[in-house]
Length: 146
Image (cartoon, rainbow, N blue to C red; front, top):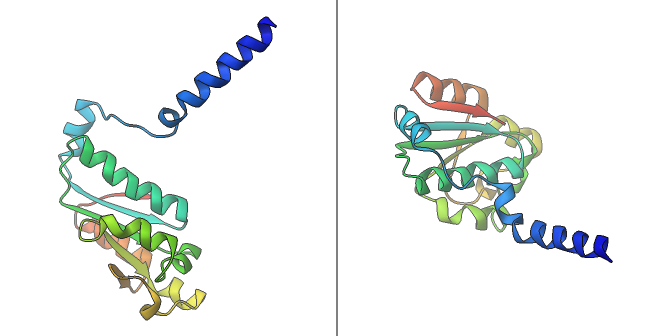
């Protein structure tokens, strides 16, 4: 009986604290100060999970007082097929329009058969993802690859 109560208590605690386990909510003051030094951010990614994660990171930075001048996601790979009108990602991206720039690799679009006119509004097409990220780096962006 004692073991059952202990197990039940552990499960309740895990469920109650589950939302706090998955994402950072607070950035310490030193990290915010460091991030202010280069307020332009660029990301290159290939998955839906990372697309959503990088958009959520935008929220985290803003909520913690990080000033952002530019925030750009460069998308290549199979996730390009999910950036079309009527998709779940279109709905997810809606609140970031005008705040976050998304550049979509035209090479990936061609290989995957995604026409520019099928992309949802708010996306830009770039000739190649790799060259776009090099361009961001040349312009002083902090960049990450997922």
